[in-house]
Image (cartoon, rainbow, N blue to C red):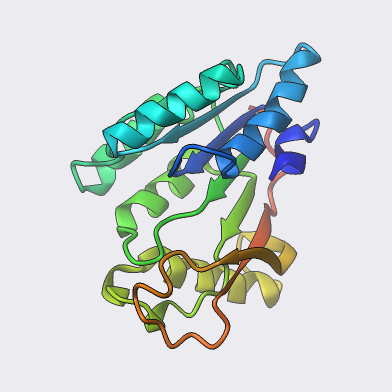
Amino acid sequence: IRCLAEHPATFRAAALFYGRAGPNGVFSAALGLRSRAALGHRVRLVTAEADEARCASGRLFLKRRRLDQVVQLRCERCCAAGDMDTCSAEFSRNWCPDGRLDVLFMDLDITFSPTHIHISILRTCRPRIIFAESSGIRWWLYNYARDTHWPQYEEKLHQLASAGVGNFTLVVDQHWSNFDIPDARIHHSTDPDPIRRFSIYHALDYHKDAD
């Protein structure tokens, strides 16, 4: 994550979502972006956290480490209206107002990920790079699997990219993250391999845009 954020081509990034304050994915990305900012580049990562207490702790955590200069942590429930058009307008206004995202870090809740969120940000912000955590997870083995739309979407994305078709190429193929699936024990999952993996996807039109 830090390497992607620190790459010379990264200026605009986003992360769905923040989660608990501490050395999480946003923190890693922020360290990379801070290095870019130290070189005089204008960089920013936008993320959000719906839980007010977590968000307040996250803002304090980032501020103490002077990472709030490169991270905009929004304390709100993203796309609360629940419809695609309103969600797309929200992303366009708050998440990618300056054009296409260079990197999108996706680490959505494996037990609940409404379709309108990931569809809207992908269509509206058109990320050049997608970092997908929990890639290839056996989503059907976890509680509330009926709402796990992002894992199903990423599964299809992976199939297309692996076959050399679709809008993305596969750069990293389900590499070990060395993290367990969140709450796997709580949900009493029968997953025989509850180890998280990540994949990185590269948009085929990466070099065609100049926005």
